[in-house]
Image 1 (cartoon, rainbow, N blue to C red):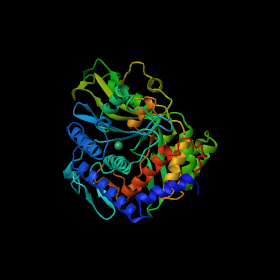
Image 2: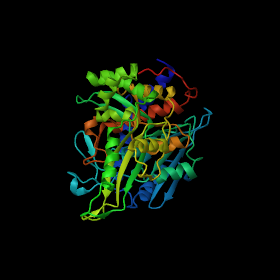
Image 3: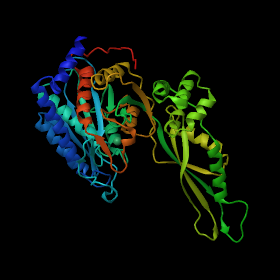
Image 4: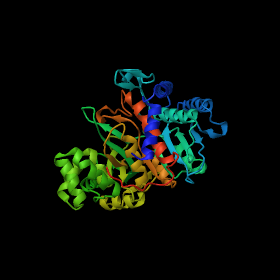
Length: 478
Ligand SMILES: [Zn+2]
């Protein structure tokens, strides 16, 4: 066993059960995380309700009470919401830039009438905690807060700064992360960021851990509106030209089109490592694509799987429709909304050009809805992958670590776009069928508190602990 592994073991012992004092500490911090989560869930921090700043202020007081100086804990207000920045000063002995940890304090709305349990009260059974945000993402806000407090109380000195950025509107406009990357770039500067929101461990139906996912990249979320126009007229005097027909024809051409297969290091590694876990014809198709990306039969088979179609290239699909102005009038306009998830490396404008070509009607008017943010994949980082494997080993020995490409825009896309490589992961292990993020009866396994505290503590030891200053550059074996 290396000296690093020994010190990790000692650290785990401190937080876990190897000594009575350590066990007491572990229990105390587990209770702290639960208490923070309980307080968080009762706050309805959905967009527009103005509840985030008070949540941020409460967290700020916890950090101050644990000994963080006032200057290290900063609330950054923005309209009805806010971000919270916390800097844990290291001794700088590694000469390396900080590590950024990011989660979000807001939630998607929840209507208590639709829920079995009150979504704004932490409830539990033997296995799970329930409540809005209990998984996405107040759990990890509570874990990171507890972790920083535990380290501070212990007198831990990392060899580089550790920075927390809790954002305040990830589920809506993501204006807070844009404010941070624009106006607070120095404060959040980091060698890399962990976006502690998404990714993490998967359990099978037997409750066994079978994979741990790390997000390295995200597709660009972009929405286009396409409009057909027509002079219109009276419906009693129909003509061949008609805005609704023109739009429908264009949509039928889009329906028949498939963007070409695209792969990158992330998706190929994802398929390579997922193939043996999935098995069957789907696993076989993944292995065949890795061996030969021109295997059309394998591509077609995988494209039939909703879980995997997004991993194979850009996708665009109509999602909304509007048109006409009276039931007895020829329509003067018809508009479809087309939502795209653009494979990294392809821009928004080039994707729009493809859609225009496929629609094959120069009379159609196209526009981009909102301001899509594009980000390239974060580099494959062997040091981080090794740290993850090492940190998981005492908890879930041998679990494969699988790189992943997300299909939406998390705050990580903005950090990446600002030049901070970002990796999405959480210490939560959950059966995918138990994951009700954004949905009714959102839940998180209770065991995740202990797992997450141990996992992240080990990660910090690996990446910012004494003796961790030299990148290991170790092999990235699953
Ligand atoms: Zn989230």
